[in-house]
Image 1 (spheres, helix red, strand yellow):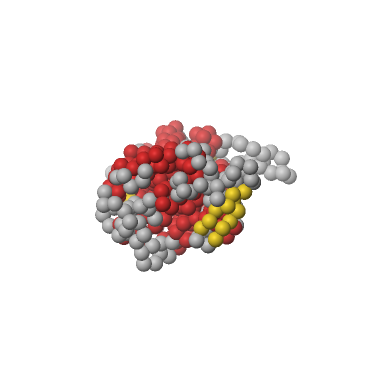
Image 2: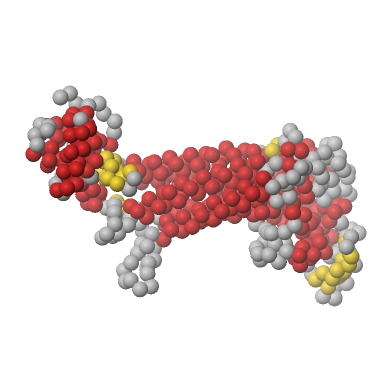
Length: 472
């Protein structure tokens, strides 16, 4: 029965029996059971998932109102409640743990109950008086968890990605800017962690930008699959208990409400059985994370020292780096970048296991894949904003150190190959390592090339771009 306005609890009934529910909450008995059954992590649904479900419920209520399937007054109240859910007004009422019963039934019913109880209030009733607005019969009319959760999960991912894209663009722009800034700074390349031929510091940073740009493009491409929705498929993708026009109207409404380009999938059974789209996006996020780890590790190496490492670049000093060693400054943002990226890779492993675990007409592992993908997007977005603002934009070059290494690398001998042959060039390189003398000094002493040839062939700047060999 509904609350009388004075009691601290209200009674609600479901197919399993009667339960006491706190009188002032907007969720109902099914949510209360889920809270008791799944005290797993203490983590709640991602706010963007809640927002997306509010959008789905608004779109469905509009379609049902238009088709005269739900009373107009009730539908209007549901729509208002769904809009408030989208605005985050009732986020504290979404209390089901992210790890819950399969398929997300508990979270879905949490949504239905919150919107139903808010709609009841809007039309003048008391919380829990489901004779006025029922979570299943009205809010969920023509719907099933089996088509609503995949739809809400895909939409939430699209919405969250919209926050990531501009941050990725900023990272790329910042790296490209450093590429131009450092263009004239020569340094030694390194392969196998050993001396390699000269290159420009700017080339290194421009290549980082290229990697992030390609990772970003891959994410955007894979996200296109999220736009195909199986809303209207109902229980097993056949559309049972739905009006023939409901599906088209609901998805059209959802497109308008969300601002996303959405389309009805050509096979609703596919959209219910398969979560290929979530796997593809998660893989794209993982690949981005792999590039971030690689780049952050490079930045840590290039800035290592200051006296006993490479020390070719300087990272912004953000905080003291040791509780015992005075003056120590650590590469905290690249370290953070690696740790966040490790989490993204772990999330992708969870998504992969969940995506392959579907059986027959439904994959019931959607709650964990939704949580994992949304968390990955959120932490990558927040990380990359810090990575850009507190690390990349403040990087400076240690030109003296770079100059020293570019002259010291024994791989300058590589430029000698077209003129004296690989074997003689190797001998020069070995002698340089053994004696500590420069390649130029040894070539000059042995009269292997003329002074003019030495100046042109062993010019480190000329080695940073393709060129035809000099005529001897």
